[in-house]
Amino acid sequence: MEIVIVPDAAAGGELIAAAIADLLIRKPDALLGVATGSTPLPIYEALATKVRETDLDVSRARICQLDEYVGLPKGHPESYRSVVLREVVEPLGLTESSFMGPDGSAEDIAAACLAYDQALAAAGGVDLQLLGIGTDGHIGFNEPCSSLASRTRIKTLTERTRVDNARFFNNLDEVPHHVITQGIGTILEARHLVLLATGEGKADAVALTVEGPVSAVVPASALQLHPHATVVVDEAAASGLK
Ligand code: F6R
Image (cartoon, rainbow, N blue to C red; front, side, top):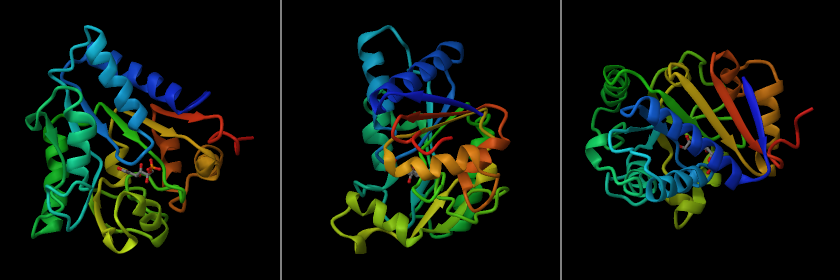
């Protein structure tokens, strides 16, 4: 696992956007796995700026979601489908046809999970998967004690994660209780994992991820098992490292 400490979130965004640009130059139709939440926004902003201001061609890039709320209609502004379309797909000048995600409004959620794992494999696998980290060490929405071999499936959000995510909704009651998330085993199949963590609130989770034992109690520690995992942290998020 490679650890890169940057001065702040903007620098992390620039660094990772540059890595994505390099990938798309090498492999124009790369499949880029994207996370939602606040942390990756500087990455998406930096990448969109590159597309506007340089000759970087992302027109053949493909985008896939890491997770999705269960029960929100597809058009809901906080469904992760809507968020990824708004924050990533549209600013890059792409269309819905270059984008895939799990169907959180499906009647048969188990079938939707299986179909998504199959769709990722059929697409040739994820080339670069962006990850954030929860204050409890989750990646995707693999909450503590998720199996390290897990596949895409439905998970119940912990109260802590629902409270953390309530800022995107009018109140806590509106935050769904369930999500579809790529499993840890699914995430580990991506060719390159890039986790960005910023802010002091992530310092404990980062320290356990990087310096603790590999354990289902800290799902992000599974990155230690991956041959090509990069953890980018700002100085605040790095403050718990020895
Ligand atoms: C979101 C996701 C989550 C977030 C994590 C951190 O798609 O998979 O693991 O990355 O909850 O969220 P922020 O960045 O909002 O602190």
